[in-house]
Image (tube, rainbow, N blue to C red; front, side, top):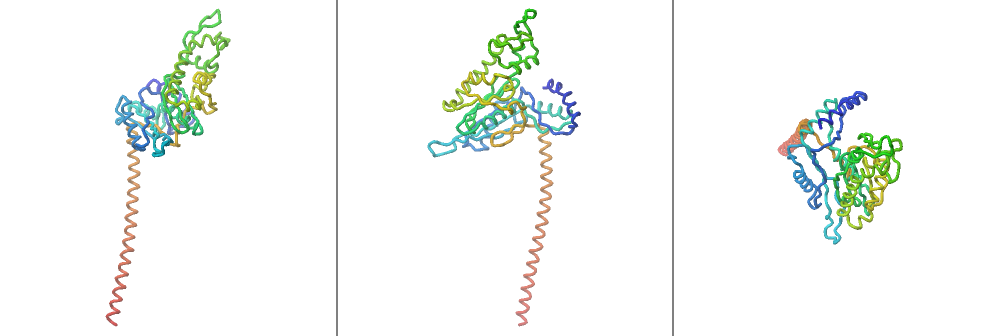
Length: 376
């Protein structure tokens, strides 16, 4: 993480200065190898709080550090709309909870870096977790209840596969294939048709540019005439990574969806993979799913994800920032409480005054009546 932050420091400093953003509150998306996150499902009969507590236990087991001493968040993201066919109990679906935990040392390092840039931290979230939440949102927005949408979203070093039948979440899987593995594959020695230069090695940035421009080529095509690169030279390098992605996708669909759900399933490719020409069509063809046009929004950068039921799942902050924010909230609440108490005492005094006036008036009336009775 330190290396990434050092690399990003100068460009961010220049951007902040150029646009006069000092003091701006920011959300940080970052690559993480230490965070633990995922979707944990629990029978809806357990209730909202029961599902969240179960997710915390599962997250504790998944993380290699105690989550109670480190930043962590859990939140309900969807509840299946399932019905008992017998009709005795309609609460037979699952409640799905998103949970994430990160080491406090990593969170503090990022917070210190943000402050050094003259910015203020709102929250932070690993890129993988943000992509998972985005894919869940995309899958659950797939259409009518009878349709099934399978979302394949690839980012840098891995990807996520999510399926939803209507608004019912069927599965969430992390897959080992990321777009970087495709770039790195093209960084190997490539045979060319140039007699003066029979082989070539591309840098990572050159491989990225080639893949986003040429995409997944068809056998026999000339990909880059200037450098003499053909599809037949690239495909043997790309095929092992593509095949792994295909197998993971097919296995997830096979075991995660019923036969009827597979028949209506449509594939939606988003994230960085949607920018690779021919990738989505290849995945649809190899998995047997119909391809759904990802549209213009699939290429947008991940923003703060809004997931099922319109609930925003935010990131987290270091423990010390949590405590500082809690202290400020308590002070505000205490100040509000004192004001409320003063108002209550004032109203109570006014009520007491009016009650005493009423009693005094009743006493005077009674005294006048007794006096009249004596004189009469």
